[in-house]
Length: 282
Ligand code: AMP
Image 1 (cartoon, rainbow, N blue to C red):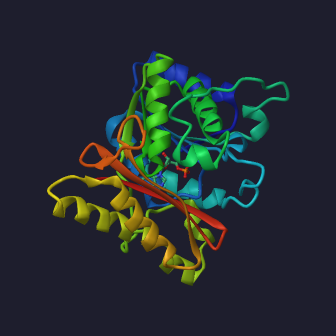
Image 2: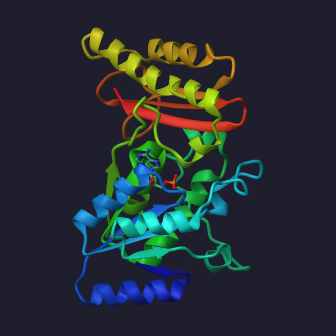
């Protein structure tokens, strides 16, 4: 596996592969790999001749009071895990390589970035859309894989690819979970033992919501789901809901009826410290 740190070198390699008629699969990440990341790499490996994973903790998608500096990092471990998945290139540029001193451009996906995480994290999705656009231009992939764990991000990237005519197939990979249902996340590392146990309330709320929809013959008022999920989360005094919302699976607009067209999206903070998200189709 080759480690590439400069835009010029990455573009040169991608251009060379494109010239040779090889297909390129891209897996963008912020590193501190877990089984979720590795599953995305495995899928790319099974679909493409060349696999690039990018490791870049993107400052533009962090708010001023967020965890940019504390974000977990372990380059050696990531390198060895990506290698074991037969990744061809790990692109890991320094911040100044991606954002030069005179950097001025920002990409906004207007509607899809407004609600859910966008409401709690102003500017976050402009940072995501901008860096992903840059990574597409730098790596020139045929296909890019994103996790459904970040459901709003995935919807926004599909929109961006369509709006800006990128000739790239976008694949959403199902959420990879721990054995007790907690969605894998690099941020789970912040949880102490007690918090780790409480964190399963998001998945429990999802299971209960699915049961409610099923019991009511396939559709139920969204309000009932929202109330149940809020209660489940906030029965733990350490857990505070950031949002619980039943939204249309494509537009992400809130819907009154929870049915097979809807997704339950949840975010909470544990001890006002660790922000966790989850979602599921209903
Ligand atoms: P991150 O490093 O957290 O930015 O994630 C990089 C990519 O991995 C994104 O497309 C995420 O949606 C995806 N991802 C993160 N956690 C999971 C998970 N538990 N299951 C599936 N995909 C995931």
